[in-house]
Image (cartoon, rainbow, N blue to C red; front, side, top):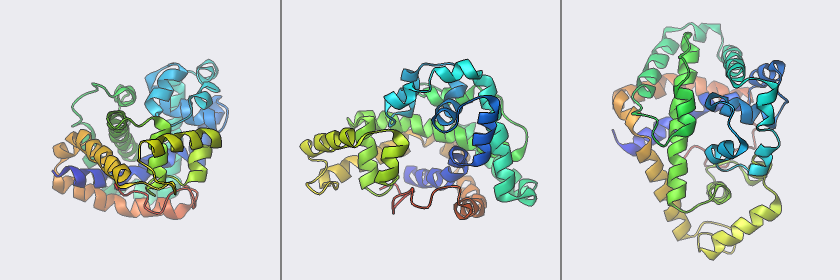
Length: 290
């Protein structure tokens, strides 16, 4: 299977995973379990499958967040709620969110069951946990039983496996977490600058200093846009990310991947139409690889 095709397939499904970061049902379950809202629910909710790790591990695996922001809530979160209970609460929240967003008819449909089976085949084709710490945490969890949670769990395994590989690609390119965020943002394929700053915890001074470093490397021009070298480097990163994430999609096969994307299309559209994601959050080319 062509690695760029597999990359496009993965990106087309990403919203069905990442809605868990924005759906109020997930936040509510985590707060009810004992976590503090906002940053703690995000960092602890996503990192919990790795266990009671320190702030440094979370910063390393999340990569483009300000470590100081993470240190405000980790490891304090683990003293409030056991990581295993945090994970259970997160899955309860996803369950409720999926039911609200898609409706019971879709939740019980043969189409969703088929999509869950296809996504599971891909996730179970991941070759191993070597060098993939965040994925490894999720891979150690038991699979849920309801098809809609099988779908979310499988997409989460695929997403975190891809994300770990993406960090390796960024490291290969010599881009720090903040530099990666800036180049992603100015390319228009990531979050807009306002949200990149506030949602990743960086100050304007830190952002400007990183922009200056990228300018010195001739990756950004005087207007703060990607130079030819900057665009080429981002393409190298994306190509390597697709390559490092291709194994599970090869296991599913091109026809299976196309069928999964076809089935999931209306649900992705429903998520976008629901308002779960802030309308001004994404750049104009969000979801593209370049």
